[in-house]
Image 1 (cartoon, rainbow, N blue to C red):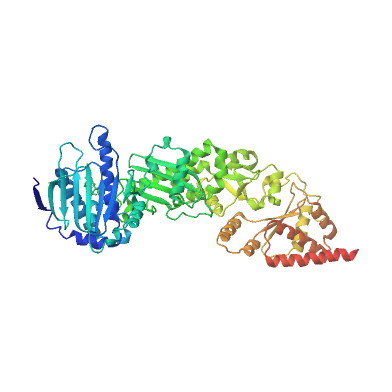
Image 2: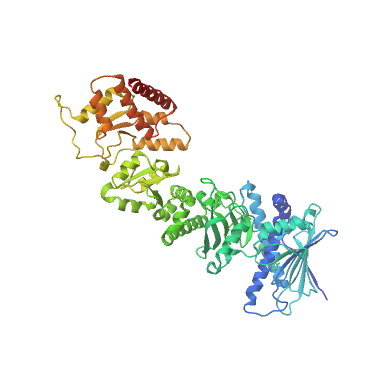
Length: 611
Ligand code: ADP
Ligand code: MG
């Protein structure tokens, strides 16, 4: 005997279905995700029960999607926990329905639908977006419980009766409406399962074909996962991304639940943020591949998965950005990434240094944009040194302490063998090498954070140690002038260029006739301008110092030959000495090079004509 019970859920909310249909039209697909995740929940619940109770029907858990094209029926079947008739009344008629009502209200009040990420909360009733009639046949795992049939055509009027059903679990049949025939298609269904349910931990079949990968690696115990499994997972998620450098397994229980695996990809361009690199999940169900609201921008370089079961995903962006949970999540991820870098740095510095060229841009960019990250990783910040090794700033300062009084000399990689580096090295000093455009910003930032440190380009002014303080300023002549004074006077009368300053000093290296010094400030401006592709060689030239080395034999001879003579040859020679310094400083523009070539040619001709 089957008895039938009829009912109506709530009169005032009768019109929620037209609203749901209207608002969600473009997101119709999500009913698949909702019904399959319910089936998966039902299996998970039974798995839990199986730890303490026995039941019939085996533990060969599965979810099946099938369809009948002629009758236009789409069926979802699971062998999970099932429902008793009391449970159907409670979970479907009350809880699920009130969830749907809340959801509809939320959508109704939300002006900007595009602002909404994820669409959780609608649940079971989303199937009425595509159905004119829905039936649930379900049998609880509990012994002696009768199977139940629930059916409804409107979503608000329902009837419940007991039926015969042999197997444990729930079978939901959707009688699709005239606009939803597209779901009677195996490829369409398989596609949607792949998109939303690929990592649900229960096998899902579409028309008897297995449709999901299962194995949400991020939910497994990190200590039990082999390195290859992490690699495989990465190439499964991002088939064309090559290898990753390393990964971070996130596993948090408190104060929020979060699991995930973030990979550091091999970057091919500076600061290339991976588009949609982080896939967001809620209980293994795919939600979105835009995690930008959850993590700071510099971390969007990372790729991988984040699963947050409790995140209120059906809320707007502006809300998310101010949500304390979201802030905590972001803070946690930043800290984990920082910890991981520090750990690698400490445990395996060699490996860390090997990877540095791949990760440094990311680390530096993060340090510049995020205070927390700066603090978390500052001890792992390293710079190449001029000896092909690496320094942290502390190591550099420690090593050069005695000679350096907390100055940090730095140079471009291309300046490795410049006259400046050689001068520095000849005095046993070292420089760190800056190699990316972001470094000029980072240096400013580091100075701000460490008021004791002073960064100085190797060509900004000469290290005190390079200048030979003991050198005698030369014999004082009849006019009370030292050799240095006379040198200065000679070059001032022979080299004419507006705005430059000329100095003479005895350098410890006699083979360098002259060097150009640029104010540190100008150098930094110029670096930043070059980042913006502005040509400022003219600017650089306007403000620099020509330092004449009074220890240089060439300079001494020039003075001896041409002092007070006012000859063309003397002028040309002085100018050439200046030119050589400009070349060393890479401070010639095209016009200068042309002029230089002319001068040199005529100078050489002059020399040859004498023979
Ligand atoms: P939620 O999944 O967020 O709880 P839903 O509207 O999706 O909300 O589902 C409401 C409830 O209906 C579920 O919590 C569950 O108790 C019950 N339910 C839905 N589908 C199934 C199923 N396939 N097997 C067992 N119970 C189900
Ligand atoms: Mg659900």
